[in-house]
Image 1: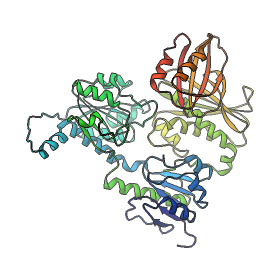
Image 2: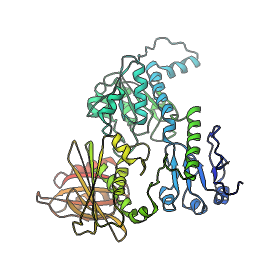
Image 3: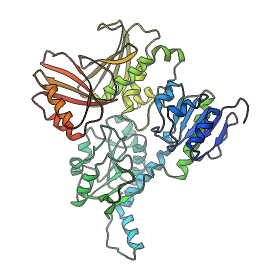
Image 4: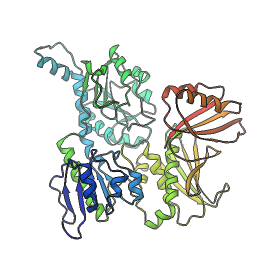
Length: 527
């Protein structure tokens, strides 16, 4: 042990390469047991982990010196971010390290599906020598990419190099960006699908993207298309893909991900000769693993030495006094941003953030919090207070801030307006009794805590609206934990918001949308 030198404990198997930082001490203990980790973690200033080690409240209590947690890779699902943030612990990740490997696997799967590589491999190993199979060339084929972000753009570059024409659909990317890539950007998913000989998806899995490539979408593809999913299981509906393959509309498919991993042995796609499968290998290359290890060690070491500019998932990049003064309003801003993102159905080009009233510190950072919350549901790596505005600009979203006198009877009020190609969405909130509250949605005054799963319903002013919705939810076993009502507007519509204990299944939501005699619109928000 080097006196006075920050110490980093590496708890999972991760390649650190030849990276060395003389100002920190690195202790490599891959596979350390939970019991031993709890016993020794109190001696360390930093932790580096992958997905095996669970970092929860109990472990953090045992680590009073801990200042930085580094997660090799993208996800931070094994880390209690709220608990770490409450203790002032910075959480870092290295999302860029696997970009090239994920893009290359996508292209490999495209080739394997188009040329029947896996099928022929199995036949040859089984003693057969069948040369009758006719594959398809990728050169000259039309590639459709859903999600032209970090990985999707790299797939596009490689596909263009193969002589493919490339089209994209991504409501959160600018046309200038796709023009720079050489990708034709479509305004609707349907119009892009109609011209995609090969389809690949590169989006995060969330309420908006779950099942976004289903039976109707697959039917829009030209006959004989190839479908690739190396992003997240569930973006492409597996049952719909199975049916499209059975009738021959989809020629072949390639999957690196499943809804349930590993898939059950009797999963119907496992038995098909026209499907190429791999075991979630997007980040599994020697180079990517080395990059992950080197990057996360560098970022953790730099963070311990005071540099939080790279990879911070939860670091506010604000002075402690600002965080103390605006903490609840930063939390409120993030929640309002997440709500605006999910309540808006069209592409957003402008986020207007207004802070009304007297704040003990200038409230401009609340606009950054709103941008961070807005971006969280559309990115596959979490934004932070350091990069949120830059990412918003990159995605073609302008963030404007304004302040003014108190209004609406609130000492402090934060209002967020999201506008673009469709209807404008407005949400407003305040901090009441030290707790963030939503106080208005689209002009309807309504007070509710921004948490859990919420159903936001506008309804016709007729008796029984809430009762009918409650009956449908009750019959489906979905419990309502909170209910707030708004007034009737001039157009004869009112609003009510329900907080639910669980996310209603899609068939239940369809039943609710079918209550056209009482429900005007219904939107789901997950916070």
